[in-house]
Length: 109
Image (cartoon, rainbow, N blue to C red; front, side):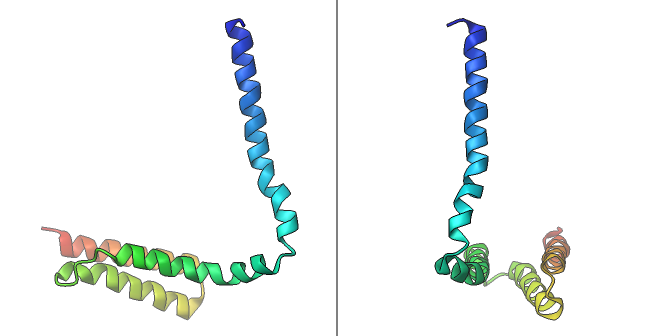
């Protein structure tokens, strides 16, 4: 097989695989929409994922040092903003800004 034919075949195979991988979620989602399990998971998973992420982020937190203030304060601000405004973007930005500012103050020097 010549180099040109090989390159064309490689591009065609890559295009076919890419198209199939992009079409698969749409083809698989139609039967799943009627599933009771999927409806249940769609209401429960966001909170479960958040709990797992918080536990993962705080697992190595040194509770005996002053550095614990930045992440815990940022967590409290994030939860407080979300309970107050019910806006995920505001909560994430507020918590991130709080952590960045406090980490910069506490860790500077």
